[in-house]
Length: 169
Image (cartoon, helix red, strand yellow):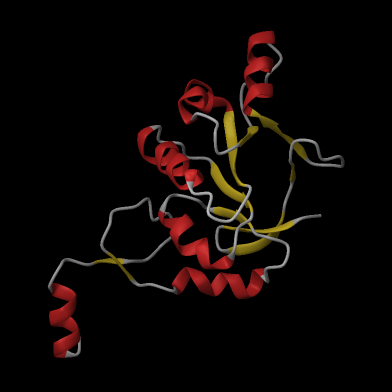
């Protein structure tokens, strides 16, 4: 069974991604979810949905009341559209379910992904999940606003941090 980081803990995953065989609840592609809704066969709640970088979050918005998990796929290094998708889901559409980053995710990205609203991380298999947990504490101050679910950050204001460093605070 796949291991991932959820709510700052390493846990076993209880979902199956599209095209994977085995046990666990099935995560549907956006197209499959929309087809199931049109056919009247989609569950009314507890659905998992998989979004690719080119998928429009706006197309998922009317279905979010059914969704418990959104997996945003990062297929390659340098693919950043998932950051924007996460921000839209958390801030514009107020999605409160699990938001997971999956794919080519390196531990160096965890802090920044969490700032965008991700609360679960399916890292590249080469990454050590226990070592990756330390990355959430990489920074303690943030200048930009963010979702910051589960983060304990101070807000920095230009000049105040320099003064605090100079005075030893």
